[in-house]
Image 1 (tube, rainbow, N blue to C red):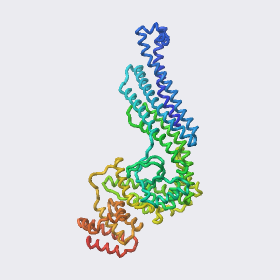
Image 2 (cartoon, rainbow, N blue to C red):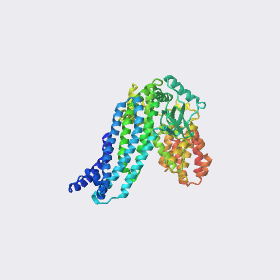
Image 3 (cartoon, one colour):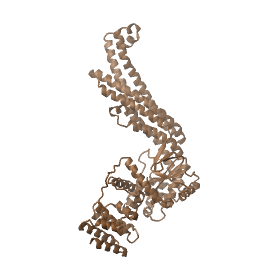
Image 4 (tube, helix red, strand yellow):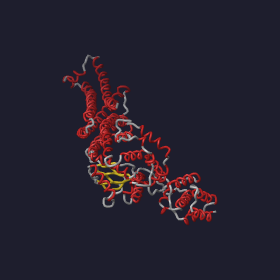
Length: 580
């Protein structure tokens, strides 16, 4: 379908040029025929061309004849361009060596040819519109015609620039930080051991970040937190996911990624990436708002879409096979069940990270900061997961299929079945947050890293357009209630998930704008929590109704587990003595 659409759009302008040229020329020839003259012989006979009227006519008709020839040539080149890509994609098939030999030079040449076609067809379109208007209404809208021509000129230049992207070395940018081998010996030893067992090269660098993803790269990587470029092979680890993975699950996930190194997948991806960069950059540039001039680039956009789809279809077929191969590598160093539960956790909790990002952005719009996004993600998994809905989500994962030939990853259910397991047979308890055996413990000073990366993430959000007001928009009453609630949760020295969950539910029920993130960070980071004396001093200015709300809130938290500890009773007595 993409081929047919691109073909129709590519030959539309040449066809228009041919039709308009033939129309105008036939009109001229019919007028000459009435005088028993022939246009071709008239302009080719030297005995006539010195006559001023004849010379003027021939000069006027010459560009129209050129329009017809250029239109035919443009149509032939356009069809040849599409057919070359069509047959190349079939010759290359799923052979990575053929793909890396055929596509990069073909795309480089194709972008140049397409740039010339945009310019030529832009000229054909502008001149055809001009001739058509003059022929029909004896006038022309020169402003609109000039705009179309300008659009073609800009589009052609953008495609030339895009072709040079193919020759440039590709660099990815990551919001993260590179770990030092001497500072994080346990993690590097963990990865080195897996590399040795798989017979794969150990990565040159390990980068950690907040993005909920794991991947490997052989290209240059610019790391924002360190403000430096990494060369060689890099393994990216997600701190939020490491908080909810067990060590065995992390072993399976890293084993999968190292399997890509063993299969030289990243080596080939490094050759593929300039092709994507050139095509994608060209399409993005042509998709910009050029006003009426965008009309001249419509065919080129259709061709680039087809090229991307044709190339990606070939590469993705290989990608699916390589994903299965990387999974098999993972099962050489980890239990298949561990990799299966890790894959399911990523699917189950993807929305939790998205919702957290939305909450963080909302807080920033009120000038409210957040200390540790990674810990907050794990707290959502720990406190907020609806256990009753897990079977429903698992069923959806099990029913998922490949929806499009350009999907590069097989469905999670298919990957799990390839390992000899069934999605619906996996114990759902294994998918819940566990306090024990967290893989995050492999990373030294992970809290400090997470907090620094959270600050960097805030800067990133601002860089992409999140507006932060000059003054904080704080409901101090709600913040005071949250702080007193955190003191009650911490009173007995233990933070229990059920107690936190219950305290949040009560807080949101009795206080408008109760902020769960503030409450959780107070519970997790007691150093952020104002002292009782500071809270009492701030609460003295409250009216009695709000003081009663604080007392009621603390009473309900203390009694939520039907057992009021000595510490909770003592705290409640202090608050009643001050506010009662």
